[in-house]
Image (cartoon, rainbow, N blue to C red; front, side, top):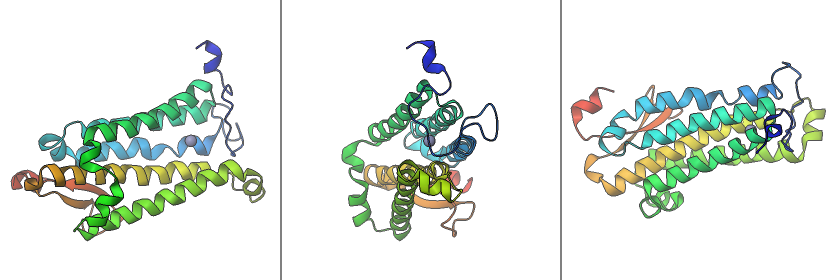
Length: 222
Ligand SMILES: [Zn+2]
């Protein structure tokens, strides 16, 4: 790799949003700042999963940290449209995928939907449905930005790739939450995992996490 791969615009990929329209330093402004959830969300998840990390699987936090790396790489890519940024953006998403699979092992969590079909807990099932719906919306945004940029530009809305960033975050991290839930449910059912929501447990629009009843006094501390 030579220095020219760090140069702005060296990537062959350019999204629908116009370049350098808002700031002379940021190529695609909305596509850059829409990665903010990747930076704000993981510290919360690290906090909410502290008991899970302590008693079940400390490496869960690796996934949350990798999500931050994904957000930073993606923001760097959209700010510069450099080839290095593009590679980082693509590779880090693969890292998260591989880390999730290797952490929770394929046999324990194989095919999320198969687990969802037999799951007893309705809240877990609903989170699976919510995830899948948001994932489909994210993919629709991605495809529209890529394939129908002319139409969206005529409608003055070349920002669907930014929506993809937001929607993919709010469907990807709950998928990791579900993996974490099924892992402990299969491997350590005695710790009675419960899917909970922050800030209010009765509001399923909040941030989902897995609470462990390993030791009641630790759970109450959350
Ligand atoms: Zn992007």
